[in-house]
Image 1 (spheres, rainbow, N blue to C red):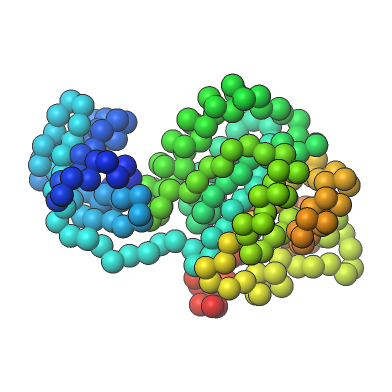
Image 2: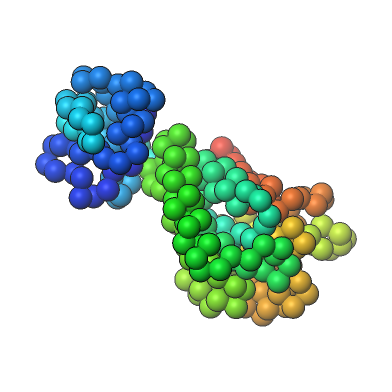
Length: 252
C-alpha cells in the first residue's frame, strides 16, 4: 500500500483529509478509486490503514480502518551534517540517507565547499529538500520524516553539538595512519536512543583549521574504511553501518 504523511490539522476524528501534491499522486499516478486502501502517517510517527471514501479535484478523504503497530526507525537518532557539495549531491544524500534511517540533516558551509548558498538560494532549495525527504520517507515506509535544519558553518555546528550524546566526523587522514580510530569501534559503543551527530566534509574534505575546531569542540575523528569515500558516499556508509549493527546483528 502507498504511504502518505499527513499534517496534524488534517486528522479529524476517524477521517483523514489529504490535499496538495498527494491528491495528484493518488488520483493520477496511483489511479486509486473509492474503496482503495492507503497508509496514512501522522506527525507523531503513528500509521493507519485508511480506506478512500471521497475523491475530489482538490482533496481526498479517507476513513481510518486500523492503526498499525510498527516501527521502522533506527534505534538511535542520527543527524548527518553534510558539507555543501557541487551539483545535486546534497539531494542524493537526503534521498538515500532518508531511506537508510537518518533522523535529521544539517547542510553546512565548509571552508572547502566550492558552492556557496545565500539566504535566498537556501530558502528556494529548502522547498525541494522537504519534498525529497517526504517522498523518500513514503517510499521507504518510514514512521517519521527527517528534519532538515537550517544551514550552518562549522562554528555554529559546534555550538549546536551540545544537544547530542555522540559527536563524530569522518576524516580521510584517519584512513592513512597506522593508528586510527575506526568507525566500527565508535558504533560498538553506541546505545539505543542516543543522539548522534556525524559531520562529513565537502569534496575537498575538512581544512586543518576545521579539524582543530571540531576536535576542540568534542568531535572524534573516525575512519570510514581504508578507502577514501566521496562526500556523498560517506554518510551512506555511516547510516548503513549503524543500521547493520543495531537492526541486523541485533546489538543493543
